[in-house]
Length: 50
Image 1 (cartoon, rainbow, N blue to C red):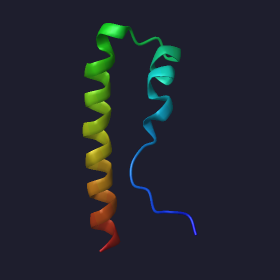
Image 2: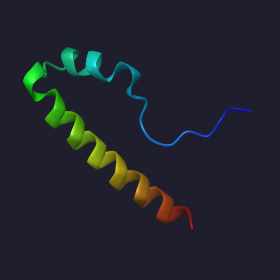
Image 3: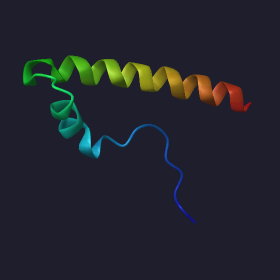
């Protein structure tokens, strides 16, 4: 049985940002924005499961 995972897999996140053309000085800001969106999406998904 596969363990339950919630949220994004960030193991390749920096590589994906570089591939997308995000500059190093913008990585922290972009990462924080993605985490905010991820949290909102998970909260919405969990609320819909009830």
